[in-house]
Image 1 (cartoon, rainbow over the protein chains, first blue to last red):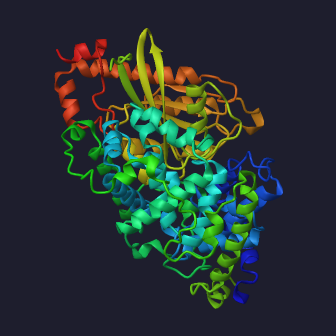
Image 2 (cartoon, chains in turn orange, blue):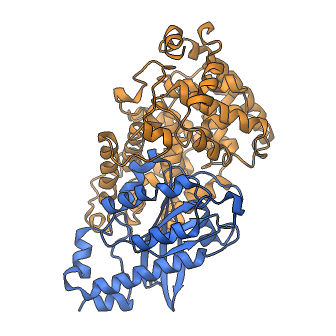
Image 3 (cartoon, rainbow over the protein chains, first blue to last red):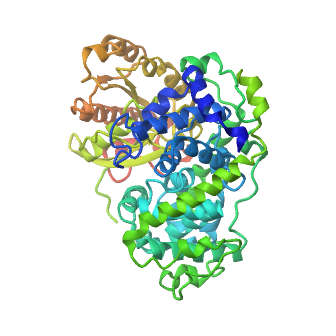
Length: 381
Length: 214
């Protein structure tokens, strides 16, 4: 960890001088968690901290820079940490192979594509009726699931539930994200099937569910746990492997001179190959859900494959699974899914776990090979 | 199920980050102004049933993220758009200068006859904050043959007008298209312009669709 001493401060100084992302970051800080006491006031201490962490990180990981969505992630971290801790925790989220969010935010969003394709596969396999229903009403899963994957459910489910998922995310990594996405649809399947309009479904999944999830947090967490087991049994709990470019290609902390267009804030007129590929993939998705295609869509998905258990939400939690351990879960699991019968303690509990997990993140971030102090020195002078 | 609207018009809202795209959509659809907003990640969707000179129309409004990196996602939505509300912020010269980028992007990715309306938001600002004079907006609008409004989401100025103008232009353009035999409704359906879930553009018996099948 010693080699990281002073890095945050140095990046902050460089950001003041060179960052091309400051305006975007400033406008996003202005719009992030404004109902939270820390962020309510413009230029409050935490708003400044959020600005600092994001600008400093945009200098530390220049391949990534800043992408909208990162403000939400850093914003949550800063509710429980000071800015330097949040900076390193953010770095761990981006670069540690357990989270590898770098690939979510870089040009072309390769990891988002992996998440969404995998999610579609799960829905097709376990909830085929719902998938057909979505297709019939032309609801592309990108539309409802993007923020689930991009910012780990921030502003899509109630904050207390979101924190519970974050707790597990810190310990388990992306498996819980895959499982939660599936669980949301599983729990709300009947309700969604009754909605005969894309607008109703997007409004429910994007807005209403954030206000009121409809199930209490403990119940949802148990359902997520059950989903994780079920997905693992079917070997669908993990995403397909990442592309090499989903990880930073250059040493972190290395300064890359931005081109003139970036410096003056002009948009690039030419799309790169990576960008074109992503756009093409999204267009193909849209074609796949065009209504005339849907009517021919044969039911080759086997509805019986999985399980009646999954199609029947009432039986999800027939037995208490709260203490079932899953895979490599640590002893923290029992606390997370545990029997905190008093819902009012949720936030405190989460704070505890977040801090605990944050510490472990901080420790692991110090061991990241890619942090090479010598490199930084020469690059930054 | 009987449809109580005559047609669905798909509209895309484009422009730089923080010009007020989500704001104008909420102002129009929810008839409310929220002072603080969450930034749009990716693409959002809202719809509104409107009364367009006596004809009920469903406006599907697609609200996009403005940050450049998101163009890989948002560009895919250009193809099905029948109308585009292109926005800039009168207090940001950069957002105005980038209009040429947006217009070129529209030209390259949207249908050639897509209808455009230009809106310069935050016109309620103090004179000292204004970076783009109205005349400059007029000029670019004239060059690209699109109606132009200075709007204010905060003070509810010209919001309704912008969307109604867009809807009227879409209607006119569809009528025009209907007169043209080569571009009749069937062709349109096959070409897949209406993909992304809009299906056939005209549903029910709008006067437009009657004229189409001449």
